[in-house]
Length: 399
Ligand code: AMP
Image 1 (cartoon, rainbow, N blue to C red):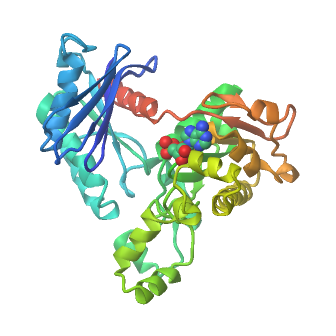
Image 2 (cartoon, rainbow, N blue to C red; image 1 turned 180 degrees about the vertical axis):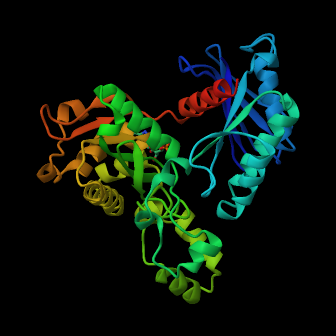
């Protein structure tokens, strides 16, 4: 089976053509500068092709992707008929979706209804789905895989905010959490690697990248996660502040004559590692600066590590124990020193780090000491594989 995986952003669109049974990716790429001019970067058959193609809307971008896939010289399929299904990453499913679904008109309406919860992301996802329908026709099944769905199993005490209850009842203001597809993939894969049933395991999943979040997964069900109503909260991230006193928003807005949107934008785009260090939002740059004793870069990394460490312990407490800690995403997979610093001091709860095993990047690896009560491991995330597998299962169930 060939599943086309689409991750549509407001002015960009990432894609992969994957066989969900083997995970083999025959082509992948990126459309950028949609609505501006348009550029396609297409990787297939060991070659990378970059082409400027007018993309006044997402439809032309999808059209460019399909043309590249069937291109007689560099294509990977001979006709669009070889695309069996399309799987879309959709950011926000609100409380309407606790799992992936095949897209119908009702689903489209429900995704549209979630737009106030993700005003920047859901419209782009909807446009991506509509563009695929327009270009491929309604006969090719399409599925929506939500970033929020995995977290829908959280209990009330984890997802409700302590604000007047009417705001939850009337406006659905609550913790939703994001990165759900990644947390689900790495927790399942960790159980698979260990030869254990996910239903038996208490897992703390650490998705540490430009955006970062932790999830507590008890018996395969998410019971808590660190992102909230928006992805702004929880850990400090590349440019996002993470948890902080919201009174600061009012203080900054008043003092610097900013609107609330401007102040929140500062917390989203100019804070986190970038704001603290003044160097960069990129962890590689921070590590380099810290090596040269740049104080603010060093402190930024220390704050990040301290907050992840505290949250691992918090989530172990939330579950009444922990069997597995998993690291994933750009930093979690590739930054051994940051992992080692995070794990320092957690020995009291059976969490250890073997320096030799931890000296690895981008591969599946157990990094805890032999015989330690808690298994700590690195599992590279693969959200696309989850999207492709969910799509395949939904299509096969329907047949
Ligand atoms: P992601 O959002 O998952 O793509 O992760 C991006 C982050 O991972 C960036 O801050 C990168 O600096 C970081 N990253 C990627 N490779 C490395 C590496 N080898 N060492 C440290 N950080 C890395």
